[in-house]
Structures are given as C-alpha cells and as structure tokens.
Length: 284
Image 1 (cartoon, rainbow, N blue to C red):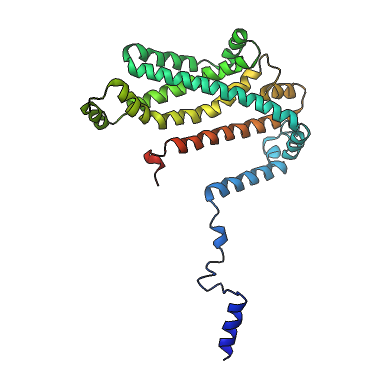
Image 2: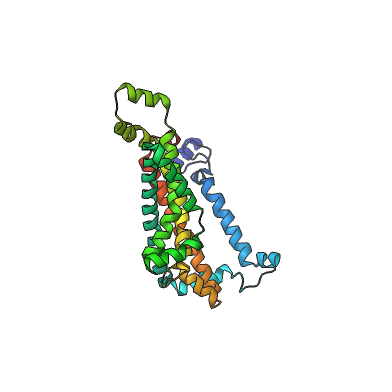
C-alpha cells in the first residue's frame, strides 16, 4: 500500500529518477559539446591567461611595451572600435576584390592551359614566376601603376592569388577518371561538353582548395600593400602605430586582421559545402 502511494506521488509530481530510462545519463547535457571546438577554445583561453600573467614576458625577457598584455589590447580596441572596424572593412574589401579578380584570372589561365596545352602550358610557368616575386617588390610597382587608392592593393592581391588558382584548377581538370573520359567519348561528346560536364566539375574541389589558400593570402597581400602610399586600412594603421610606439593599438590591428581572415576562410569553406555536396569527401 505504501509503495503504491509513493509511485502515485512521484508520477503525479513528475519526479523522474536518474536510474530510469527517461532520466538517462546525468551527463547527457555534455554530449552536444564538440571536442573539435572545445579543445581549441580551452587552449586559446589558457594561452591568453599565461599571456596576461606575463609568463611569456619572463620566458623571452620581454617588456610590456614590446608585447602588450591582452587587457591593454582589449582596451585599445574598445577606445578605437569605430576606427578599427572602418579600416578592417576597407582592408577586407581590398582582399576580397583582389582575390576574386586573381582567382578568376587564374581559372581562365588553367582553362587555356588545358584547352591548348602547347600554347597555354607556358602561362602556368609565367604565373608561378610572378607568384615568386616578393610582395614588397610588387607593392611599389603597383602603387606607381594604379595610384595610392584601393586599386593598387587589389592589384597586389590579384598577383599573389593568381598562381594558386591556376595550378590547382589545372590539376583538377587534368586529373579526370579515364573511364569517365571514355564514357563521354562513347556518347560522342564534343570538347566543350567534356570541359563543361567533366573537367570543370572535377576541378571544383581543387578550386575551393585554392580559394581557401587565397582567403588567407589575400589578407596578407592587402595589409603589406597598405604599408606603401596608403592613407587607410589595417596595414596603414599598424605601420603608424608602431612608428609612434602605440603597441596596443598595433596589436589590435593584428587581432582584427586575424579575425577577418578567419571569417573570410569560413565563408569560403561554407560555400564549398554548398556547391560540392556531390563530392565523395562530403559524403557521410
């Protein structure tokens, strides 16, 4: 009689025992945590804590003006937030514009090299040679050609991102399955159809690999280009902050450049998941 009363009381008040099927594992709420997200987050928090406690200053014998504390950098970001966001948008515009132009030109070069191997193959060598030129050597030339506006930095980014796209896209177009190529020929498919339905489709994973490489390289090219004859942008502000010994503001520029680069990379990665769902690497 007593046990029946207890069962009726617990059921009427929605009391669920942890041992029942409904309660389940008491640590069930932790199952949503992704180790690929939590572990880097914890490592980053530990890194910032050691930095704030000046552990790195003691190890490498650094002064606070040489390596500002995270709290000082955060204060500089708070005090100059509107300026930093404006300059971040300016630099990101240069990077995106230059990467789109450079990646488009690189893809066209890969198409030409694939369609006319005798004449187009040399263009890959020329693009690789252009990519070997240091940015610091390209920046004064591009500023002389395109002025000190946004066009010169976009031209620098174009030159630095063209080779990665050309080489990767060409590799993707060339690495087609011979059986798929024979199947296209058995259907009497012309050269244009083979390019459209086989070679270009097969090159898309390689294209997005190049885009992810260019997403980070474009930010580097834009910032380095702003060191020369620029009046806006994170590179310009970083250079001036170092000259006048405003190191927390300079490090704030570095932090925002890194954040913008990561966001740019994640956008490209998301587009990759949308456009090449058919690829075996995307299958679960």
